[in-house]
Length: 176
Image 1: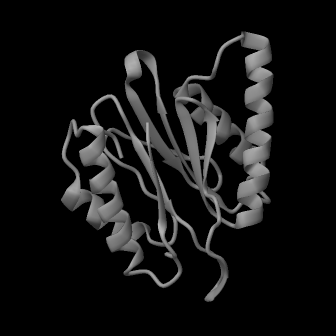
Image 2 (image 1 turned 60 degrees about the vertical axis):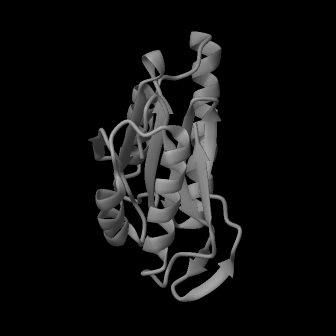
């Protein structure tokens, strides 16, 4: 979700196989650099593999260009990597959030073959996406300050995962 010169990215902590819970402390939000994060919902092993490939590509970009990747560029990279594997896809739905030029927030999400969905307010993915859409639409206000954004995202996440039996076990909210 986007605020005034800031963004929030959040996830639940559950790792499960169908209805069986395997872990309650699984990391789904990963740091690419100080102003760019990616959240990977979906199959846990695919999320970890995709994250490792993205870190590798970002480090190559840093060596070649001598700067960090812009969020728009990173979104195109993620889309290309996912599309490469379209016949045997990574079962992940990435959410990319970052601060671009002049600390302008950028958010987007993709399906498992890399089709981008850009937004100016919020994006969601995962098993609780239907209830997250409703909660975010009802709670979102433009130009929220970081404290208000944290509270809004936390409330939306907790109310949504309570309605979905395949997600939960706490939440992780990051404000940049």
